[in-house]
Image (cartoon, rainbow, N blue to C red; front, side, top):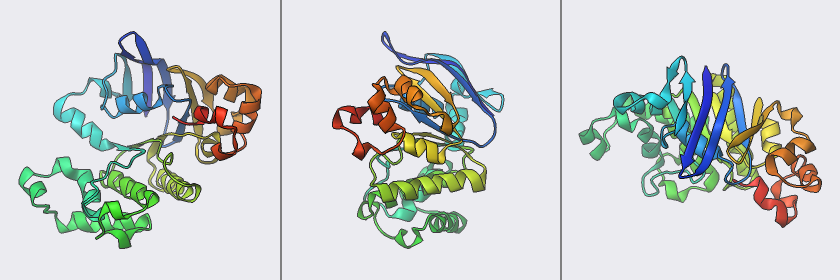
Length: 269
């Protein structure tokens, strides 16, 4: 379904993503891990066409999405929904309207200005919010919700697009452990129940091992690991994060809060 072929993104002389290739068959849950600056976010932004690639191809069902332009590119962005670390909601807008904005590009300008939505779309938005356990928050302003609730609204907005692929860029990096689990559980259910591919940039090995079918480790723009979660050994952690063995052992078995602060950066992106 997804074939990444020799994809590179350069900023001047610096390669943020350096000639990476991999393929994903079927609706897998793929985690991408690595240090800050490893190229994880740049890759997701290329997939969603928020950033152009310097070279390479990303093939989805036989079509190079990096070559799409205009209306075809916007149609692809609807099929490939993006969830961000900082939610990217409209704070003063009610929750239901934020979710409905997932299909904003399918609406006329006049309908958007006056916030006019067909009843069927409103019913769908409320059903998605109910599925995520926050239907009662629909009339509230997004800014009134907790971080975990706001991220579930962002997931609902993504689902409103009815995407084939969901890209999640550090979806739990700003959340406490309880809300992080709720958000990750929601993404996993969507992956399993809907058959949607999920590709998530994650900041702890624990999370990758618990939720992912497959893990890709990036370092300095290159893929240095591609395998199953239970293959994330101490040596693999060292290859990904470039840290010593004591860090690697801790990283594979505990959360960031339990680590010495001098190694904390290596779990963040």
